Length: 139
Image (cartoon, rainbow, N blue to C red; front, side):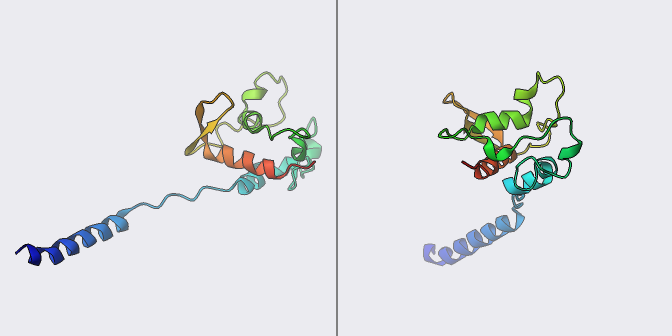
């Protein structure tokens, strides 16, 4: 009798697995850092990040050259860049030109070591954009 049940148990298990797979909701595809840059930053900073975007001329001060965020011989300042984009490091700027993106770059979080050894939940889009900016660095 036990031998006769194996094919039935296997069939039930496979059917259950197939049904669960069919019901699974696919994870939404997260935008790449490059896509986020083009959508949110290139208008002012330019496609190459040099501060020469089509809207740059109309601003009260020129946008930063994002190809020069890393000091020579130093690691890329990932945490500082993320904090600047988020608006944290610009709170005291009396005449901000760049919008605060804390409400734009939200979503699933990654745990990032912000330099104190503590993993801090950080929005994945903010991390992706910052990692893309790191690829633009020259010198």
